Length: 111
Image 1 (cartoon, rainbow, N blue to C red):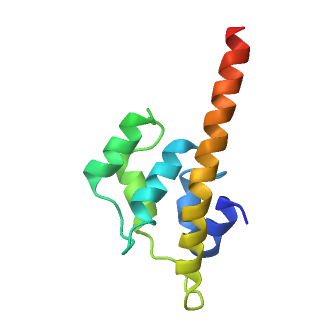
Image 2: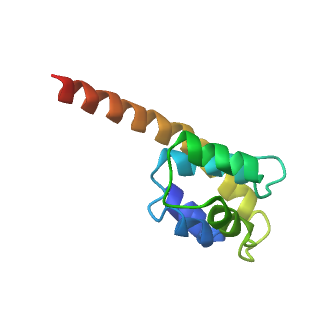
């Protein structure tokens, strides 16, 4: 399953921030919000840092926090833990592919 499908299973409101779930800033946000021992909405300072580092201006900190504070859907016991574990496995792979694509395309453009 893709990252988008995993998120759609239990927290589809997060997809309003990044519908395709294919941007590095969104992955960093998921690290903060979902991949902790006790998932909770990240602080204002943490969200501001993610948006600033990745130069995201189309969303405000409040918009992001509101989307992350929506309670997850009611699902079978263990579903959220399993989805979060799957997301934790997907994110490093997505980052690797993104970095490789960026470097390869950057080198081609430079040539």
